[in-house]
Image (cartoon, rainbow, N blue to C red):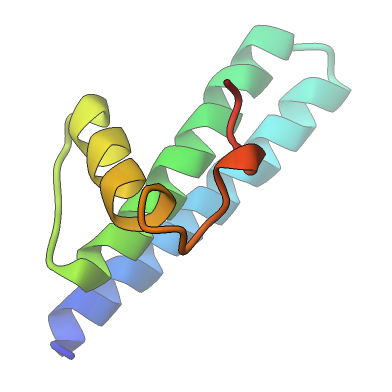
Length: 85
């Protein structure tokens, strides 16, 4: 695996963790819309951290979601019951 991809993956994972922590703090402080936004971006960055390991990248949310569903949900690697219907 390219060290560059691994570095990108680690960077995005750290960004996901940072956004999740911000979401928690916003929620505790009563900033629910901001908490929801940061939680969404935490998931977005976490998914991008996985997809870069498969040589896929996109800044568009629709592209990231589509590729993740195709590569991990439809293949059964991750169960679809964990997703909101």
